[in-house]
Length: 390
Ligand code: ZN
Image 1 (cartoon, rainbow, N blue to C red):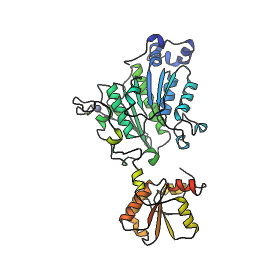
Image 2 (image 1 turned 90 degrees about the horizontal axis):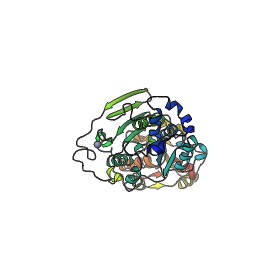
Image 3 (image 1 turned 135 degrees about the horizontal axis):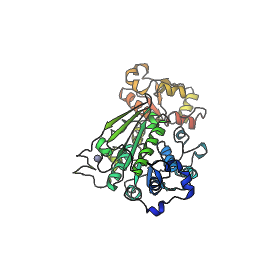
Image 4 (image 1 turned 45 degrees about the vertical axis):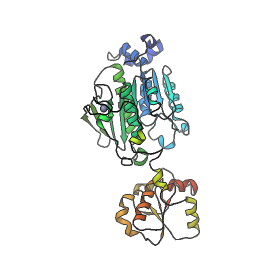
């Protein structure tokens, strides 16, 4: 790597020699390789699903300086896949929880915490302090930001992403190889690709992909093997098939091509069509709402209210409040099941899909339709805590 610290700093103590002995006896690593690992500075963006196994294995391998960027706190729903955090960590900053586990596993490494959202304002300054970047983000604005910042600072971008049962990994921005924008010049339209929070993810999948990222990082540091440069690895965990696509550097790439137009970081929310913090907020607030407490009062008073649940059948099995189930995707074809003269309250899990349903129904002439604010999660919070949240 370009900016290794002096070899002096990477000298191994006897304790370290014993700790890394299974590396040292392999000629492909050896003393020289282990010293390279100790001297290396790797930045992990995100201490979540991918970041957990990634950072744990890099720490175990003896990567001397690990930077972590994250601003979130540990949530109970994270623990199904974010194995660096434990039940006791729920509510704590992910960075504190992760740094504690990493230094407990290997006290010979330095962990640098950046408790912030990576932005166009801070990304270059943070990236410049490291040799290699590993992108464990879960959203498109940050993914493009990381890519562009890597190209602009000349740092390799070890990339992975996951969804449900599928993942992909590659090594971008190595100079001669393609970057993320060479592969995906434009982000998908906002809302088209569901997040893991919306679509779910098999808990072990980030484990699989995060370990692949860690492997690529270590190969880059050692300068050995064939890194995933110019190759996109596609992992299908259900079929357990690994495929590979050849990637070429796009000569027209706006950030790494010959006639590049992007020479500094841009507004990535705007680039990805996202306004403000949440793309869904304006949509939800634009439809008439009813608060869970108001709905409860109406039901208790015996008012004629028809509850429509627009979630999927497998979500209905997790919990329900007795509504009539028509998944949002089926609603256009099944509106005939609904009586337009009755008051209808629509709900989903959090209120986003049901806001779309309310809009559809109002456009179809249903006049007395409202959205249950906060969905069944809000109902659980405000009315009936026995309804499980998911
Ligand atoms: Zn490119």
